Image 1 (cartoon, rainbow, N blue to C red):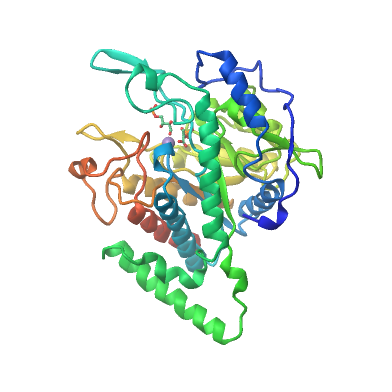
Image 2: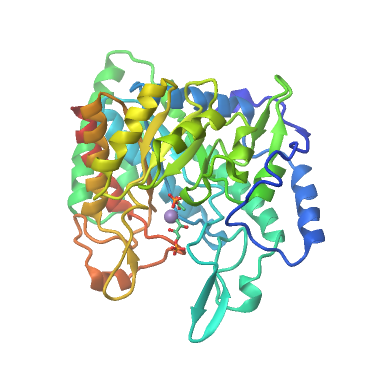
Length: 452
Ligand SMILES: O=C[C@H](O)[C@H](O)COP(=O)(O)O
Ligand SMILES: C=C(OP(=O)(O)O)C(=O)O
Ligand SMILES: [Mn+2]
């Protein structure tokens, strides 16, 4: 995050409400409309969480990824929780992303655009509006910015005050992320230190020897007189699904330099597979802001929908503005992605293609856990690269649900997590995440795909 470009984003302003009145899916039903309005007014009076200059810088980096000059790495929890905003957990997540980025940068000689699915990923779309346990039916959990995960009527009732808490949690998370990434912690010369304290296992071993290689290269360049000061600071951006319309609207600010509107809850915002209708409220909200935006595309997406999304979200074809994040499923991607890629190529406007290999590959284990297989996840990534390589287009990045902790939520990987082990540390609030080791393994495999 670039501290030097903190231009004035102070002027709160009602956003013209282009999205109001459009079909709005996956929204909480608040029992108290006056309380909702008061929270909106309060949020509008608060400072932005990110700044226009930073957002512009990310847009140009996304443009670089669209044409192969960089590669995007987006990662973080499916659903961040208020309870889990400890310094350690944030540090481990940032560290995991930095380690993955180091692997990708070094092995594939490609600059990596680092984006945390962090500091705002507090609202979730759900397949069902209600959940039933032992005959009791309550509203589904929709993320900590909406309601609480506990299964009681009080906890599950949407409370607008949670949006203020989300704003504060996002602010403190970003503050720490900025400290880690601007204060020298992310310095590549320290790469070998990040691994300290982890138990020996194959993925870490591989990382250790790799870190030694980087270390050697660094010492060589230092001896040769290269100035490393620039490496002390790392650009690290935030992103989340812009699901909660009232919250996102209240966080829009006007840039005093240009008069343009920015979503200031995160650098990048995306629309989910369930809310991406080109004429619906979520797309309308993102139409009005300057941020780089993403759209998740599932296996039923048609070329006409994609072209309509481009008309709405990037009519002028501005490089870096629009990312298409495909989540087709490993068994479908090779068949359905080429049709969309061809359509975009015919259109001619640039997009940044990103693969989300998680959401098309969710299964329920025999012992009842929502999980994903590491091999299937990697197969979707491979399919993504194959399709783009075959068509001569650019695989621009990956978007993954991960954590820096040693959870046991996804099956397989070097540790061979099996169904029995899912029970050991299954901590996610919604979807299963890659753990630290599985994340590193993914980075090594993707680095190999990027090399060719
Ligand atoms: O994270 C994505 C969605 O919110 C999630 O996959 C929906 O899960 P559900 O089918 O359990 O509602
Ligand atoms: C809800 C999500 O994904 P999708 O919109 O692709 O289902 C998600 O990223 O957690
Ligand atoms: Mn998810």
